[in-house]
Image (cartoon, rainbow, N blue to C red; front, side):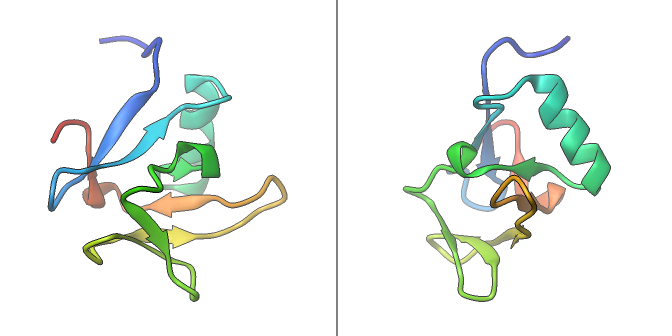
Length: 92
């Protein structure tokens, strides 16, 4: 299917709500590279659908319905939401 030319929406695999949209303000190649380096999809603040996602005080990243998505593991570039691949789907 090739490289997406527009941001891809990632959905919560339990409830089907949009939770991330990437890449935003970076290339697809940069998004894939960062995700591969860290071993899981890695999203940045501007790629989070904040209407549906929350970060708990311990860094756990969840949906409004408390479905576990992953964790916020900040790095030198800022917040980095490392998301378990089984927690997101490409289609609702």
